[in-house]
Image 1 (tube, rainbow, N blue to C red):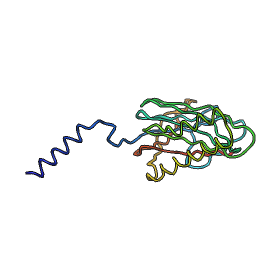
Image 2: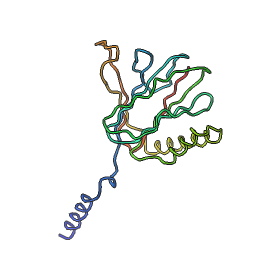
Image 3: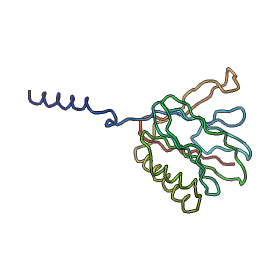
Image 4: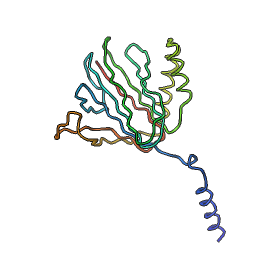
Length: 194
């Protein structure tokens, strides 16, 4: 009987805790749309494009979260594309982004998190105000640290899902998104070679 009362007391205590103490997971989707036709392209390998081509990223979160989209380019410079809290259910476009000379590989880091990353935001702001070699290096190291922390949580659960027709409206064509689920933070690197 004592064991049952203790179990009931623990369950009642856990039920009364505020929601933030419970571990939440984040469900979100990302689409890579290339060219004027916004052709949906998988993000599971390096994407090959030409100079002067354009693309958009579209991020959709199922719950309130923080989203950071940061480009590390072929000249080892960093450009922040997005740094904001987003509301659950909203769809946030990033771009269009145009690929220009010099040719090389651009890596876009999409960081999604239930919690705010104040150190990352501080380094983003510092790099935007003064894009010195040191500030860029510090910001890149923080991105890599977050990427390592996210990968320590296990490989993110991903799935390719149908997200509707393309913007051209062709009935036989589908647009696809990559869906991530089950963790509190993700760092997804998307590499583009041009």
